[in-house]
Length: 431
Image (cartoon, rainbow, N blue to C red; front, side, top):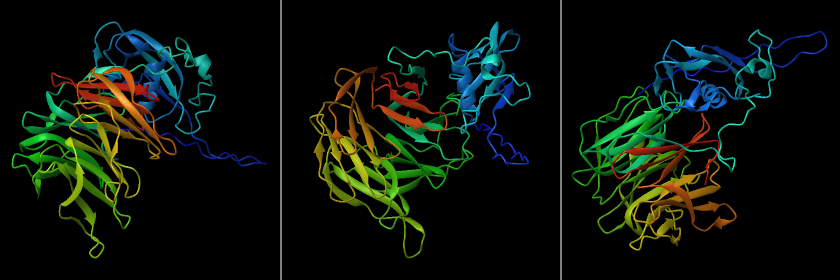
């Protein structure tokens, strides 16, 4: 795991005057000869494109700062530069930055650079005006930057936001060969580390991973058809595999939600030998106040393939899966008595599901029979809209996640050759 140092915004001391004590405000921060992971920052955010402001803004986010206030070019430097979005290295004739000034995350309305130069953002911009438009598409939406992350993955991905303490922000988990492999990405949206295997256990199907109690927990099906788990620590180490039993016929889906007493718990949903849903829960025993695994519990919901389950706040969990006809089914409030809803559509792949942080919007995503990504939105108080086609090609289950620190949406799928395709969108989803 690549651990990156995150610089926190400086804080100005309160200034006293005879008549009024001014409150403390967060300060702009100036970076001279900015660099990324030991290399000078390249002038362009992607190779030969999105130069100037987009690269400077990505750097500010990389430093856990807010809006870029000013930047100046350093043309044709003799040192190699690093492309911030992909990690690519430019070796000769590369342009970089002499200085970038970033506003804090809070108080981005600060108008003047406080690094001692006294120059305003517009004055100091020089070759790069931070108010110039970026390379958005004709609809004003951010263009998706596509990356090939390799991997030789079989099946679906599990995408996880990493807990505090991990330098990287997001991680991908998948089945490669017969084992569990993973790859993580940094706050600058780079993927410097390669895929690495977790332990030596052999697995069937695709994994499902969640963040719980400051660790990452992954769940896989072993060659014995039982459910197994392996957990990480913030230093990138992994425990040995632990068997949770059961007889399982597809990929698991794990979520973190509250139990009946209001404590966080892990729920792992699987397809059993009868084609119905079963669930295994890791919860706090109210008598001992210790966590333990409960017995398997059957849920009378039949489906094909593998489930995709999401937490909707509190103890509310919804699951989605396809039926034999390829329609997407919703199993709402699956831990209680929710009624199955057929959302229609047609797919041969497992649905992907994305939930807003306030749990008031849900986006169900599938690979249509035409190879395009289709989605159906649900909004609180309005219900489900109709299925809508996008322009994006997908080969497997679409998986999307919002990365809060860098304000980026990431969407992933596994191509037919096993390579992981990553698309990045700034600020908002294009569909």
